[in-house]
Image (cartoon, rainbow, N blue to C red; front, side):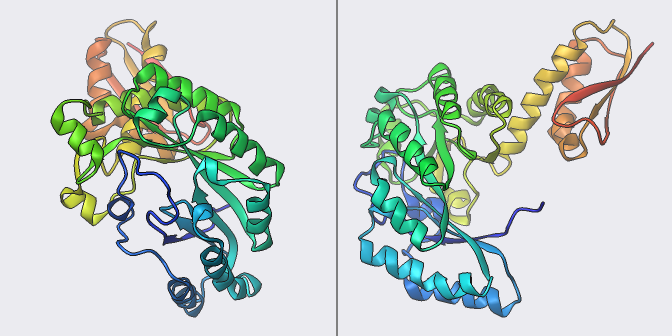
Length: 335
């Protein structure tokens, strides 16, 4: 079944009681002003006028449930007529783990919210403190349990490369997040955004950049954890925006195709395991699902070239096969 098209409405910084060192939601979202009831109505009128239906209205960018209740009500009430006529099929919103309780969730359900995204970011207390998150890992565990108990879908967001973190801590955070049983996760390797405290820390030498290469390596360690738990990874890396690409992202793991790079590394590692017992000089054909073909080949054929050289193969071919699933399968090995 095809996923519903998401109609995003951004509420950057609204309701957030903390200034995380990495955060400038206006640049990250590409939306400099918070949404109003009129903005929600306008977006949905445009969607209805163009004949769209079954959209998932998503309030992103801020801590929705920490916004004053009256504004929450105004934004959600704006969507009610469009829920009634089918233009909107579902509503989701993102918030902080410490801005969720049973009363909040009951309020959201009364307005048709079906999915809550929690910004866990890390499950390491030292990393959370160093990043200025203002909540604990225990807050995430508690909030995740409440969301699931309320019968809402749960999405958890995590970050890699935060201040005080390393690959081992990021992997452990992923394990602890997977143990909470979310319906999906988003993984955001740290990007140094202009005019944030993190940029000051980086320029002062108190924070070391989390590079694209480092992010790819650790995310390739993390991805199989969620795959093994049958938890979809619905986003890898920040969504590129014109402002970030024009200099808003001054350093860090910002790449328009970061997800493709991560899947490429995961598949390369799986291919390495398959090729360990293949005699040098062989001609090998590997099969991969059609949607993963380009990732397996790699940008500029980097995976094919590297694997051919590493195992001294006479030739290495990668082809799309329908029954490969998420793995690589050997199709032919010959002299």
